[in-house]
Image 1: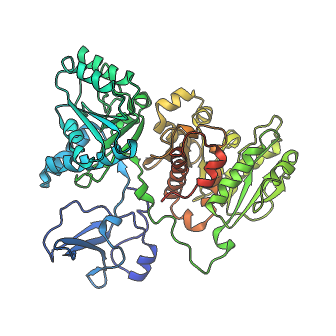
Image 2: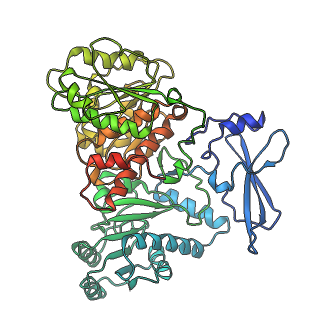
Image 3: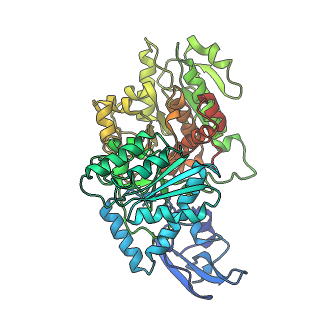
Length: 559
């Protein structure tokens, strides 16, 4: 059911030991509204009791104070967390249109109103508008007759510093001239609130013409919930669909928005989660991670620790013509801050590699079934692409994968050398293919991988002993053959440059070298992928001219 579900076995037992194991992300959000002063609520999740009491907030209102139920005393223990909202499992499921409708029905049944949800969506939407258009710039709001139009209109009161023009579109033919007039003013942003998830038939020709004119303007577009005209289940346009720069979907991602055929219309997918809906009653096998998943992660380091506490990472990388990959992987690993890093590289590039690294220990790789020394994790593969790579190097990859008790991360060329043999029980194995490499592993084309990415990830994992798989690309996936698969929300197309994958491989291995971060492999992998994409997003705010070396400098700084 998500990160960290196994941390605790039940409500009873020694409270102090339970607090030591506690992870903030396991408890769900309590969906009910705040009550009167003195009201107490309690619940149970995976055997863990939790609850909250309503107290005065000091400003004439009330607030909720959260805690966990102590099985020994039978009461709430406070000051473990300041609010129950900090405890909730933030990852949200990827859902269908029908499931979204069920979620809405559950919300209305709980007493929430459509008007309040629309108001909150409008507030969230205004924040995204403010991030995409500067105060004083013209923003054109295109509002249809449904709830998407209401959401778009609700954003207006929260944007006092922007020039706003709203076109309420009921008749696309009759309103076309007004659209032309607004687009002629070269707005900084168009907010698309024409159609929502309810569209289920081909658009009339007047609507097709209207949407095509929006796309032809080349003005950045922010779509509300779904690009107008796109089927949110299939990802197919219903004759035409808005080509959004950003799609700001409500509650949870709709399955069709993640399909490869939908990507040209969806643009960057973002999720508005805090809009007044009750806790999502739906569980699916595909989960969308959020930055909130990683609050407080990794945990703070204890004061009385040393290099040995944080593990020794070995990297086997670099060959003639590809020595830069070894350097980038090592520098990516440094950003994860393991205690020590040793890089084993080919003799032909030793001097080139060693001259570019300071804290990383560099040695010449020596053929053999094992690496000399004791390590807590091994990354193998970056830059091992030169012609004539020795068979002993390929045998090393096979031995590490099949026999090593410590985690092994296989990337790049090493992916092609792995055996499909059983691995030691409980051993951590990670593959990090891009779609082309995944295609080779499954004897499929990259296009076939992209068309069925979740299935591809699960099949790769199954072939390699239920290994963890990081399937890189737009909306990188993390998971394995069993359990949910997680979708990464961060990153942008400017990551598509040589070396970015080497940096990611090093960073993930550097995290897994640390024993504290191996306790929840899934969360650690999702965290590393998210940080990698978030670094690219921060760099992109300063313009598109950044390079992979800049990515390394930003890596790990997102909060």
